[in-house]
Image (tube, rainbow, N blue to C red):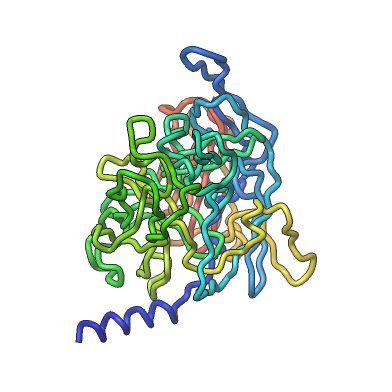
Length: 429
């Protein structure tokens, strides 16, 4: 009986292949990308904060019955303090996602190097390797080989702590692990939000989900990976058991090449007791998909440290858009037959609300007037880093707002009432 129940739940999840979302993208609301640059060529880092002329987050979303397209420059606000001396630059990405993901019998490998998914602020996530491999002598092979240098062990110390990210040589800012900015502030007792989409169209969530996959009433818990370090002393076989020829051997496990140096030092097993499958996801109910969907999850350990494989496993569960893997360079949005928006879809769908706020700029005290509201009004104010600095629920058409404890800057005000939404910029002097 238990097996029959599990089979029914799996069939329900398959039948309920949820469509790739339209309203989870963080749309640009006039913000410009900004970042902390390490200006020291040697010695302790010295950081200088820069605001660029490049628009932050996702700048455009288009869709039809088959696909969702996104445009972004691959940058966001207040990017963290990465150590490597690169500079984030405008990238002009266009990505395409299937609205109804498909599940092929033959799986596609997740790229070791380059883009594998898009976070919902328009920043791509990259693969598990740092683009070096063991070439028979050392780790100076460039590209992808048999034994690929694992990125977090080799580069984790240079990543920022806001997005688990840094720019590569060509200025493409990208995440490798645990983009905390996209789920911070959520209690660990609540299901994590969607933080992006894999190139197969399935959602990627933060690290917390329901303890029972198909039961939204179960406790929320940290999703544990099924990957673990292999029990090996020599590198003569791959994780799937494939025996290698002598010319493909990696270095023996040693102090110079400790276990974990390479992506291939890890293997997935049900015996590891994880919540997630070999693709780093599972069929489950989520707040956005109450009938169930396949979903990937960010993996961290009990201390919050990123844990292999961080975002996706070594293969996609669904069929990825192969043009996305080339970093969106070959994708164009059809000129007809698509619907596009450049502001949050909730505004597009439900309409704007009239609102007046004065004085603006202000020294911290604002007066908000709403000419036509009924019932509960929800108010949220975000700083340039996307963090909520003020929230309130009230009835009536007037409200005083005190931001005097905040530092000077520009903030985004969001007001919601009866399905209508108002966005505006307010400045604190």
